[in-house]
Length: 86
Image 1 (cartoon, rainbow, N blue to C red):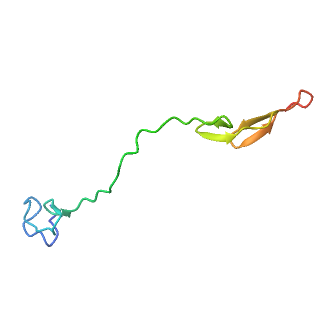
Image 2 (tube, rainbow, N blue to C red):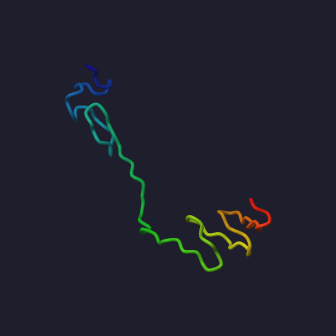
Image 3 (cartoon, rainbow, N blue to C red):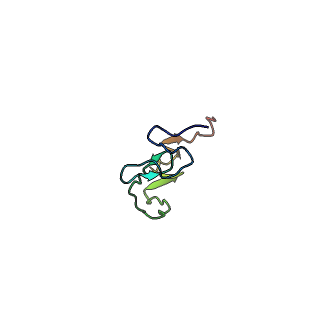
């Protein structure tokens, strides 16, 4: 059976025997303090919609590619002519 730290003279099963600093919770053998970060809600968000001058690929908006080019992510790939297959 483990004993409590030196500052808890009552043992592991006696709660509230040790003294804890102000604003700390006594857990028997241990003193604990909870730290909560401040937060706020910014809503659920809105679906991504690109303006007419952009093309959507996944969740991102890219400049539209020139004619005869196909956009894949950030790259515009030239369509191959029939005489020059891939």
